[in-house]
Length: 187
Image (cartoon, rainbow, N blue to C red):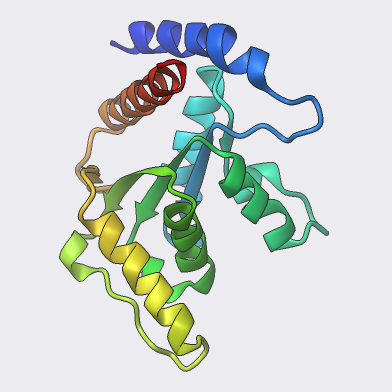
């Protein structure tokens, strides 16, 4: 299964995606939205590296940004220019303003988002008011979170899950979604 996925991703990249990359843009096919303290060193990092080795162009803040980069100057354009977003939900995800902002921007720009529920159930995800966000922002975050919770996604338990199977399943989901998006453009 992995060989077919690798071959499909590389062919898709060469035939469809590569010729359409503007020279001046920082290309990004997949934006990985995640809570760093929960997932950067495991699921998000592995997913980024796996997709990158497949010939795709994922964006993960810790891999695509350097010290001195301004967060919103790099992240917002990456979201606006990506084709697909992965939202990696984890136990501390909703505690982060940045996670919720990125998710809201993905939803507002009508990106296709693949939720990954990592060590958390959708029903456990709630936007909390810690007094740091306006009522408007809280509403924006809540709407995006509700939309993501009711989108078909993947689940993964980091203690008992099969990492290889998960990475292959996630890659297959990306490839199928990219193919559907490209087919929609050409019709």
